[in-house]
Image (cartoon, rainbow over all chains, first blue to last red; front, side, top):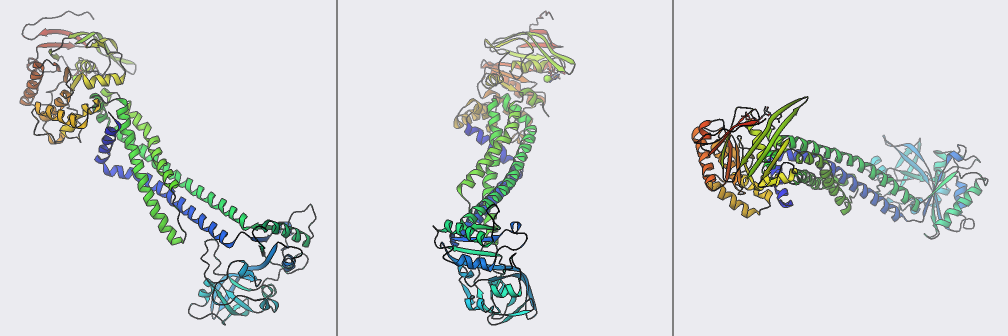
Amino acid sequence: MNLNESFLTALDSLMANKLRAALTMLGVIIGVAAVIALLSLGNGVNESITGEISSIGTNLISVMPDRENSGGYPPLSTADVEALSDPLRAPAISQVAASVQGGQEVIYSGASVNTTVLGVTANYFEVNNMTEFQSGDGLNQNDLDTSARVVVLGAGAASDLFPEEYPISKSIKINGVSYEVIGVLEESGSAMGNTDDNIYLPLSTAQKRLYPDRTRSGERAVSGINVQAASEELAEAAQEQITEVLRDQHDIIYAADDDFTILSQAELLDVFDTITATMTAFLGSIAGISLVVGGIGIMNIMLVSVTERTREIGIRKAIGALKRDILAQFLIESVVLSLVGGLLGISLGWLISSVAGNMLGVPTVMDGGTVLLSSGFAAAIGLIFGIYPAWRAAGLQPIEALRYE
Amino acid sequence: MIEMRNITKTYEMGTQAVHALRGVDLRIEEGEFLAIMGPSGSGKSTLMNIIGCLDTPTGGSYSLDDVDVSQMSDDDLARIRNKRVGFVFQQYNLLSRTTAVKQVALPLMYAGVGRRERIRRAQEALQAVGLGDRMDHRPDELSGGQQQRAAIARALVTQPSIILADEPTGNLDTSSGEEILEIFKELNAQDITVIFVTHDPEVAEYAKRTVLLRDGLIESDKQNGHKRTMEHAS
Ligand SMILES: Nc1ncnc2c1ncn2[C@@H]1O[C@H](COP(=O)(O)OP(=O)(O)OP(=O)(O)O)[C@@H](O)[C@H]1O
Ligand SMILES: [Mg+2]
């Protein structure tokens, strides 16, 4: 008997018990759908973040404090920002922005929101690619020099505080002090860390009124410095100069560790890549486990089916079916179950990931590799979990099988 | 030709052994028409299953058409069942969800015959047993006698040289039983060896030779009409 006949025979038996076949498939359908959905969402998130980071430009470098090595004091200061801005000391650097931040309660005419309030340098918006404004404008150097009481709102913060009014020139209260709204940013639409609810005011104002922290040497502290290298080629040189200047500024002896951390966009890209890859692998393997459970379900049903159909197997053997005929029939049944389940699972997974992707605002990326992998995996599961029941069926002695009630 | 020498069959039931056959010598020429009789538990079915290569003997030698089959592999036995022997069971043993014509075509499928050809031959076989108008009926849509005739068609379809039937009329009323026996008679007239088991002496009369089993041994072996008894050493 050829494989074609075995296939038709197997299909016949499956069609004779459609409900059972469907329920058996369900395990594989869910497993494959989960794998597909999670992998394509994971890939989508990864790609959008990667895209975002590279769009900012790989010449951006962040400097963050490392408090463990600074004796508990905030290590970075306004003086550091000035030092890094000196083209004689750090020629590879073109721009230096800084910020200091914390959570604050912000009040406007009775309504209040808790959000992140940052004190920033005037060039902060430009360096961080936040140059689009819904209305008004960003901060200028004069605002910083005079420690002006003005704020720029993120799009989300603006709509929270001013659901119905035009925010420009309105006055909001932070920590009991009034500030005039001079600008509202466009929505960022960013997938990594939502900055739309943030509120920005001049660094000098924030340091005086909200975040009076000082470094060990008494300088006014900042919580982060964003450096733009003069060009992408100079990014590495810029990193070295930052280290040099800051160690000098902080009087760090040769043997001691840096009290700050430097993260370039290129490194950030790597970090995010690793994070999303790990996440995707983790979720994928959980989904994989459900696929294995689906496979065990197939084995279970096939074993029941072999027992139930002992007499049928006896009859087939009595009229001349060889071991391999019976083996093929049952094996094909389980592979068809898992493969059809796999294909349905792929469609379902694709559906789930596009719906979820839409809701979460992440693109989904379903590549041929994922589809091939999971359908191959599903077929393999049918084969692996089908072998034992099929082997049991093939090994039955005809006379005993016929006698079975 | 069937040649059995000192065939034994022992079932191990835990510590106890059941001796179903205790040394059967039997020679059946081509074209014979043979009835096997004997009390319940005397080993008739056991003997039939061994003749039909559904089961293997514990001891002794059995050759079918001069080929020793007593020590053959499972798959070789399956090929013999497929091509040389047609087996008819008391309980018909039809596949419950399969139509008569597909049912009868099944042995040809395992023999590797193409789809068209086997449907054609299955239809012929069904016609030969008088089921030409029941081709697409499933077993539960057929009477007992019709089911048994379908089973005979299935046994015939590969054109075997031997038809074996274990109490083929046991579940049937007298007239359906007679129809079955008439079919056997016709087959035998075409030089096919027919061997069947029965409890009923009248049914046994259809055959030309009757073998009587008792306690796993042949007690008597006579040509119908003129009786002759054989002596046996156990
Ligand atoms: N699978 C088995 N396991 C154990 N003992 C068995 C088995 N099959 C048959 N026997 C025993 O072998 C003996 C012969 O059985 P067999 O079925 O050949 O009898 P039979 O002549 O066909 O009887 P009946 O007329 O009732 O069908 C019986 O004692 C039976 O109990
Ligand atoms: Mg019996």
